[in-house]
Image 1 (cartoon, rainbow, N blue to C red):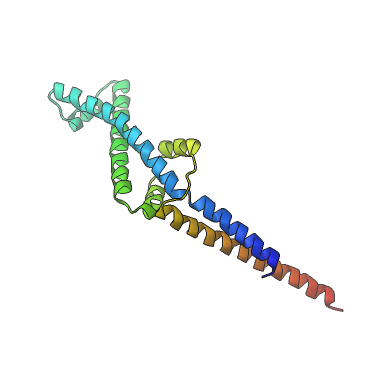
Image 2: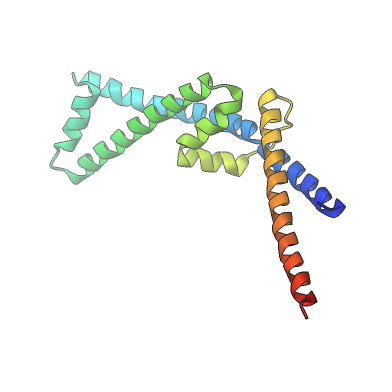
Length: 172
């Protein structure tokens, strides 16, 4: 590997390290947004549960009442409420997984089952953080190695193509 190729590989490694070092920070910001979403959904779900209890129904009985209604609006409202409850429970589960995961693995937990709305809003408002944590360092090293490997492989491919062209030109 020539000196220019080494410099390119180092720059690519540093770029990869910088980008990947932000994964734990993104996971942290995502986790904070999940907390906000859960807080808002909790108000809706608890209100629904309270209204059901006021009419001597549990949650499932109230949802069944919606589902069995002859009114399209009420049936659709029941489907919507079931969706809200499912999302609330899914976000609670993900919040618990993120809370109990090791800092280095939180980005993997997030990638496993992200909530589309929370993920999109986190991405939109993402503010990079300085990788001063152990998890940031680990992801920075992963990104550096990944960038180095990609640059090296691209360099090898380029060298082979250039070498073949030179060999082809030298053939009488």
